[in-house]
Length: 102
Image 1 (cartoon, rainbow, N blue to C red):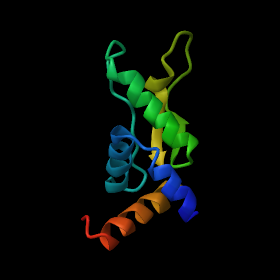
Image 2 (cartoon, one colour; image 1 turned 135 degrees about the vertical axis):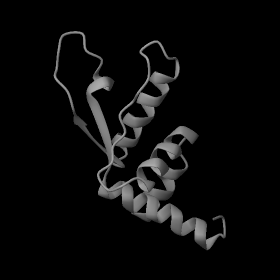
Image 3 (spheres, one colour; image 1 turned 90 degrees about the vertical axis):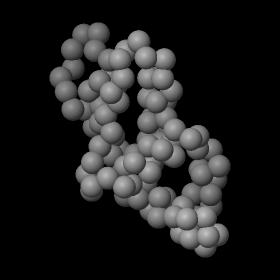
């Protein structure tokens, strides 16, 4: 598990880390729901980060709206920190404390 966490940490971007930190600091069960205008150029990057974190097992996702023809999936999907994501965040904080980064 530690090796996977170290490998994964090296692959994260700043936006990935910001998402994890915000969810880690939030109340248990809090979720991220992208709130971008569909014309916003950052929307694709943000959605890609959420999906990447989900593929690493760090986030869970759930539909929170009704499926309709032509709907933007991002507008009805919410993301929460998984138990594995909490373990990952705890591991990263442990490293920071050991190296006196915090």
